[in-house]
Image 1 (cartoon, rainbow over the protein chains, first blue to last red):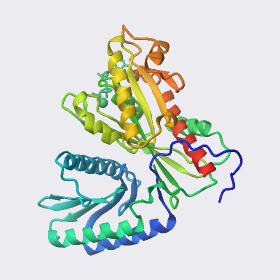
Image 2 (image 1 turned 135 degrees about the vertical axis):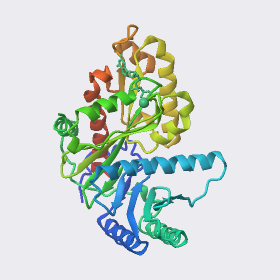
Image 3 (image 1 turned 30 degrees about the horizontal axis):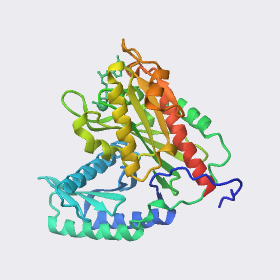
Image 4 (image 1 turned 90 degrees about the vertical axis):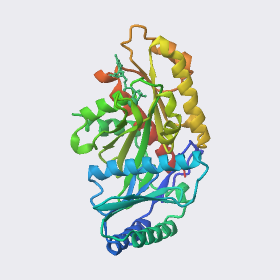
Length: 175
Length: 197
Ligand SMILES: Nc1nc2c(ncn2[C@@H]2O[C@H](COP(=O)(O)OP(=O)(O)OP(=O)(O)O)[C@@H](O)[C@H]2O)c(=O)[nH]1
Ligand SMILES: [Mg+2]
């Protein structure tokens, strides 16, 4: 806990923020690990609406998956916007891409998240759709739709000149 | 913004916004070309055949730890052409900070103003109180023959209180300074919040 009560709190604008606690992280990993086995799926990826990865069944440091998550979020945002333009917005949105060797689902998970599941072509569509829908419900229980404003106080960023640290951190990225 | 306390990761979204052809993509191209490949993603560009941004450009940078948290900065650029208004709004949504890339050419003064106003309308519609929102202004294309000065442009856009940089993006002039400033603003904003909540 931090104990910073000195001075008047200054409430700057804080954009929508999603915080994943250690417990949520673990429960999500369990639920999606189960989905991957049951389906079985080649890849399961959960990201927030900005394409920031929360869970990935493969190495989430892999930049290919970082790029994938950004594109998935853009894809869902475009699909939703199309639905809105056509007056057909729905809470549930499941997009299926059906191919010969594989297919994939892109699902809206409440207002904050997007789930991507890629499966081999042999996996029956009816079955996979069912368990993807179940997984969506399960995640919504772990990360309720309205949980995007919670802030966990943390003292890790206290008393430091942030701009200086950022400058240093960015300088060291530069070739 | 996404904070994962288990991984101690901080994901931030910074959007480059501005009128068509002002040099938003050029900023990202230059950053991509100069950052250590181990610390960045590829540059994803959804663009037209003429190389105009169609939906967005995306690039992730991974910074070294800052007080125990690893910041991952997601950079996006919006499409500037008029017909892409809806897409522009979608890309802006969820931003933790914006870089407004203006075109310094005198001929583009109204386009800058129009884009600036629209950006604020969108941000406001997301429930954002814009005077406190991390915003950095870049006056790009300073090498145009009819480029206005930073002073003239600041008055025109009414951005005197904000961090401002002049630039020639394809050459890299001003690009890195702009990036440092916006990431610094976003992180400072976050720090204030974490400390006062
Ligand atoms: N001379 C000069 N040319 C520039 C500068 N910045 C960008 N350009 C050029 O202007 C053109 C448009 O640049 P982009 O970076 O694609 O512009 P944009 O803002 O992404 O354009 P949209 O995606 O259509 O909104 C390209 O040909 C760039 O090389 C600059 O500072 N000086
Ligand atoms: Mg562009």
